[in-house]
Length: 92
Image 1 (cartoon, rainbow, N blue to C red):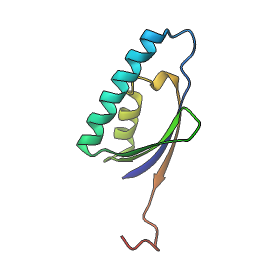
Image 2: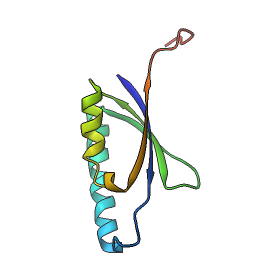
Image 3: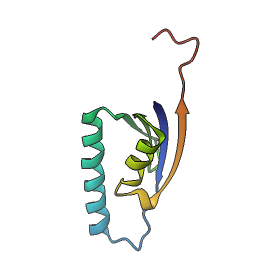
Image 4: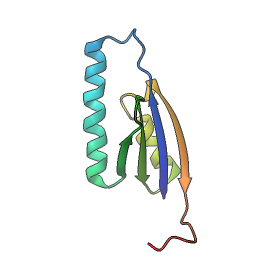
């Protein structure tokens, strides 16, 4: 099942710089592990924002929820999920 996910990050000032850097490092390692495993298909920055669009290919809604809720930055994110279906005009 394919999902397009927008993640907007807003780390509050109350989170210190050292803690924020540690969270970002853990986030990067976690996302790259999922990318290597094929569930996190791609990730793109939104220009001028602390946000990204990501494409996931997972077996279920529950699996996507598990992945997203385990993101180290999850408590500081606003997430929008769009389930994708094959378009009848697609040739691929």
